[in-house]
Image (cartoon, rainbow, N blue to C red):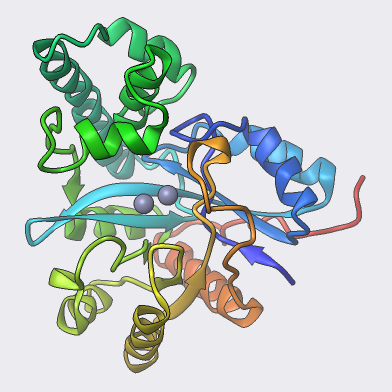
Length: 296
Ligand SMILES: [Zn+2]
Ligand SMILES: [Zn+2]
């Protein structure tokens, strides 16, 4: 079984529609793919229909922007009830904050004499529920100010650069509780990506495990071999699930091809067991993963 548990579509900052993601996952030889757009479940229904038609397994999730002890942390939430009022309220406040961030960044770019507008950014963002930095980057590319999203981040949009505006995020501990109340489970995404372990060292992860975190995304392109080995050992010592995934964004991010990192089948099984327990505790039906099956 080839299992990839982290992928984006145009419902956040990827470039594929949910149906195109599913087709790309089939083409990449995956048996199971997760759809994990930022702070939203809006792509789930389309992806589910496409997965059922194609016969591929689908795990419905989202990647939630949170803060923990002063640092931004991405939390992968799998199989929550997307209509749960508490979770919806938390996600809404993240999305509202993200929307407010775009005008702040655009204003700074305009101060530099660059001709970008909020309307232009929103137009480029298309149907996404989460207009954010990548779309501001796209506007800079479209105007020819930079050659790529990467250059836009390096020159203008990364923390410490001139047009950076701090991100909207929910409190990680609050978000974990909301996720569990909605019958979902949380896995911390790329915890050591582009950072030192910082607040997500062994003690920080142990604290989050006590609060119900069920897994660590160990195999991710932002982690080198030494980080992966160390994180694997931390996960083992804390009894956490180990996941691996591509963080695919379509054409939106290079070196993140579907299947470039994989999750072991027994780790997926542990994740689903935890999700079933969370759903029972929340008084919901056991959440439905769509399993691979012969194409209908
Ligand atoms: Zn992330
Ligand atoms: Zn991601």
